[in-house]
Image (cartoon, rainbow over all chains, first blue to last red; front, side, top):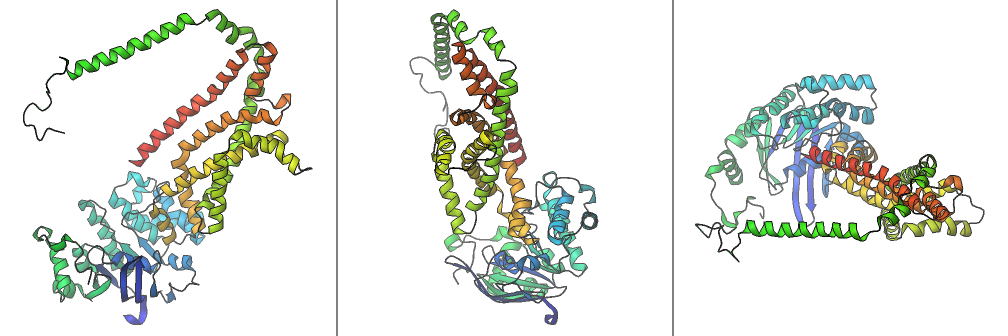
Length: 264
Length: 281
């Protein structure tokens, strides 16, 4: 699996001012692999994901995507990003454009596709996420779940080799989460390489090939979902999972911090 | 507020001067109405209505102004305003993008420009364009004669304000929009033009329309440039006629012509604002 690594991260460091968010991350994601990154808020998992397509500039270390070094100062970052699809927590659809235009405009402006070709690709991808009937709607007329599926379709229309998901269901009402996860599961089944930051343990357990637990800016442990979620070896992982799976059982802690082990 | 601490009868405080809150409010409002009506009556009796009509509302003089006040004066006012607005819009957009640039000198130049031109009276700029520039650069001719000069003068004034409006509008577009565009492979410039600026435009449409109203009024300063008969706009036209006839009716008519445009524009602004509020929801 490492022979055809699509994403390779080496000794990645990132600080925001004094706050060291990533403290030396090494991670490889093979072709067609689905990796879920879990961990408490403030653990650096979103920052790690955003370093992969350079939305955040890492302080030290290297990131390779499909053999190209993203962190090379001379890299054509716009060209690299065309191969990396990204889905945001807040959807970030373009509100002044219709659903179809959200999908066609990037294809035409970035890839230089003509009107007919981009419209065809848009229609195909809207069908994939089951939203063909919303083609002419504006994003504000859609539910959160529908908006997120359009956002996924928009990323797919660019023909990416890798998909990054930054807490894609965290901003959704609970009853809408399932539709988005179903689309992601379909993508995983089709063999898409995916890196997913999520709190959805069921999704991680059933869909992920590998689960990575991060805390305090380092990878604490990783392995198959059975290993990491089913039988965590580290105390920090166990603590996090117990709080996540049964929030009502958490007790008031010293310093009342929700970022366990932040100092350590 | 005190409902928690006082268990029973929290609202019924001991009556001051025998009046309840409701009664006191009614008395206070009644007093205000009385003062207002008294002021109106006093004005109606004090004014010399015959003289006022003579001075401001002479129908023959007003009739004499038509159709020139519309076909010439109002037309020129609109022409001056629109040309100045277009220049200001383009220049303001450029300044706003410079202000937000990561290149230091761009930011400084734009910042200095905005500070200077926002701080100077529009009148001074007109004098500068009309008198100082021809003297300082002899032989230079501003394209379009008076029309060109007005476009530049109003544009210079308007650009400083519009640049700040644009900047606020661009910054009001959520950061995620730029991130989404960049993650799709848009270059920074492309993302700005295709994604951010169109959204910023919607946000700033109401304040931009306000700016149009301000320029509309400032266009009266063109009389400082020394205009020909054909180039007169509302203020100059009204003033000329007022001194010719030794009567203020032309001023009143010119004023009404301004309101003919500014009041509907104000209505449009309020409509746009309430629409924008709905869109946010």
